Length: 209
Image 1 (cartoon, rainbow, N blue to C red):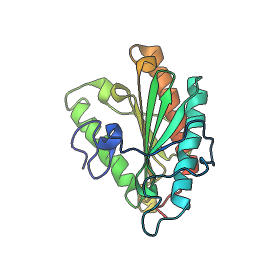
Image 2: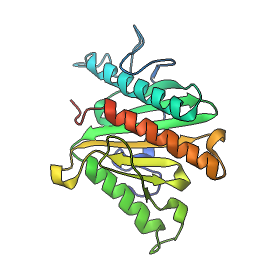
Image 3: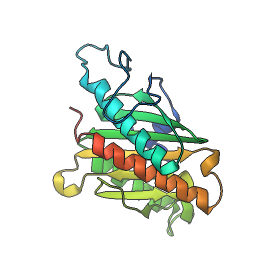
Image 4: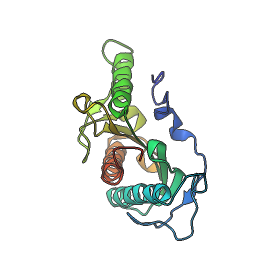
């Protein structure tokens, strides 16, 4: 369960600000990684090149899409490379974009828990803070997605209850001077978050393997 807004329980939104260190992918492009680079977990027993390759593909594709939406170059760093709990950080243009993508059997449950909690706590029946209440948006590759204005964050999944709930659960949070304060910067943050989330769905398989 996700106990507080902007936080993740059971490996959900709470890890957005905790960076574990990883591979610098500055200037990487979708589907490519830096030759000779190492990623957390790359040398673990049983690990093989597809895991770091997946991280490079997801983070590189998201970097390209987010940079295009922002209109400024971004660098990408892999924080966690595993498909079940992948995290990237994009920086540049006075913006930081933090992307988390979890592929597994509980993708829809994670989405539903987060968005239901936000609505219950901050909606009309709760604290009535409209900026914290999720707003439905469209994200390429997702089945359902919301935007949480106060957190400048997109929450989305390509799963539904009808398919058993398995798939990818993706969050993209945007922060920094370029997107702080006012309607226009918030619109920029939404545009960047949607682009990064769409690229993540395009690159991330629907299962941890």
